[in-house]
Image (cartoon, rainbow, N blue to C red; front, side, top):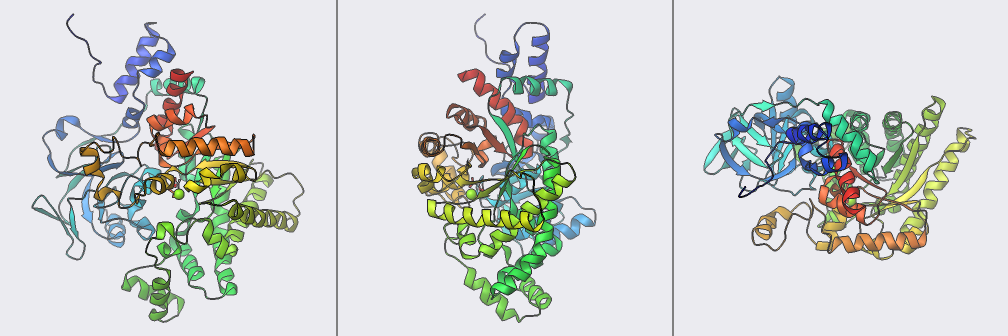
Length: 543
Ligand code: PEP
Ligand code: MG
């Protein structure tokens, strides 16, 4: 024998070979788990292109593999167009420079999403991953002309009638249609998952914002929700109107009136999520993004809003420009919103408590954890925790609820200063969750939305080994995580600590999370099986 090397195999083949070898007593369960590349499990859950057809396909360009899966469709260039044409029966790939919360309906109705800017934690990437929808982000060679309804790449032009295929697992964009293979889950997959849970010491939770996503994640084995991004609940149908009224309100009374309209929607969503996660913890993050993200930025949509609110267009334009910030990700967002507008926090906390009490009445066991985002100083946390506790007590009294309602209040550690001062924050918090998307952004000083302008050069020239928004930078950002854990536990030995940044679904980062002793990782529903296997592998590897 001159040479041996590992046989190349698909995710499905790796699972079958490992299980067959255990059956034949050639290897044990632990060895079997170590032989399956965790990241390849996604091939068992989402469609992929037929490899034989893919090799001969016309590759146009390559972007970031932002959300796995394979999609074939015709380009649409605005969210409204995507909704309209999808309803008319077309398969649509939404092609945008970047997406924002305004595009959510269009993203939902499209079969895939392609953007020319943005990184692995940009809006398009995070939202698509949450839904298990195929997305290629940051394909910088694509030039989009939304007015003309075309995009140009490599000298070729594509319009609304041209079919394209995108591979969200590799970032490839092809001309024409490639046939796809839809996976079927085998009994071997469940067996591997059972073995994984036997050896893993960290729990796997999910990032989910809607009851349907929570249910799916639970089917994939999630042991709770590590992050509900409540802002994603404000876009559908009439909600966005009430949200915009709230933002445009000039007095606290008007703002509270608009918040009254949002309260029932929030409460219903939380009831749905608590039911789906009955008996498991649900971490709900209070409003995080800058408010301008909720307002329309194009004149036709601004005109519609002005008409529906019965105010002049100039007023809408003035408020949009007032909320404009040069660096919104460093601006008025996260807990800073609740400091300025405590009535938003009050509405959200009320919705959580009312939903929890209603669930108790129907014999569902809600386990809410209220998470205050973007804390940088203990004073912010202290102030907002007190406000949160006040609302919890008020609602319980109003609803004459006498039983124990266990609601934890904690924070994200996503600002370097929070990691540096973790001991004093830990003394006042019930839990920490590392928001490593923002922590990476703020530690490197790379904008998570613009990183792809230079990242390919950094990777090609060996300045960075991998995209730090995809796989945690253990040397640098990892030190802050370690500091946050050590400080937090020094302040509060009972502190529960997990991670909810996108790194929670990346096997190498999960290995790091195990080594530093996190209690859980949280990731999008389709990455839950990957994380369960990666957590088991880390436990086997490190003991
Ligand atoms: C984070 O910053 O890691 C995080 C989970 O929050 P978001 O991505 O919503 O900013
Ligand atoms: Mg964040």
